[in-house]
Image (tube, rainbow, N blue to C red; front, side, top):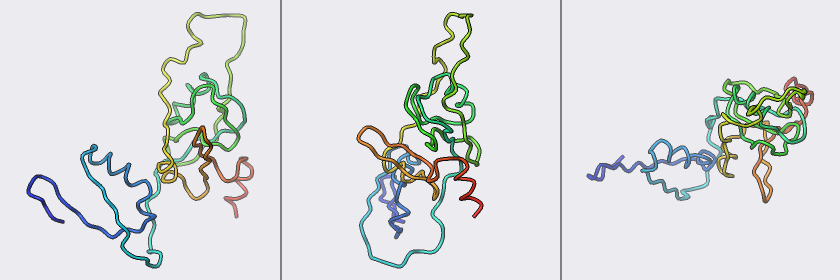
Length: 175
């Protein structure tokens, strides 16, 4: 650790490359964008013992395929932060949000509004819907757990579970 006399400090570390995945975003957040981060290859070495930090929250997983209406998303955002836009096509096993608790939760992201003959003015809007979280490729790779995958297409970066159906996920967790 070397202070430079101008209010900044230089800190040198030797860190495995897998420990740097997603750290740049975290570093910018911690330093409020004022920190500078550089990394240079030092040497090859056996895999370091110990765990690289994992996320604290679980995820919200879609239980069906189709467009996700704003009506369903308003109900889902009470359980965590969403990762999909209203009307976006989703599929079973896709991660549609970050759960507020530490466990994964399967949700009905396709639930539509009950159709009745009664019409109330101004109730079909998506007011109160918080904008979704969008990840860059590096952020997505840093976010996923061992049982999750990143799906990359020219139009989107999506996250999903390795086992798409809830029954397959239960079987895999048992053994």
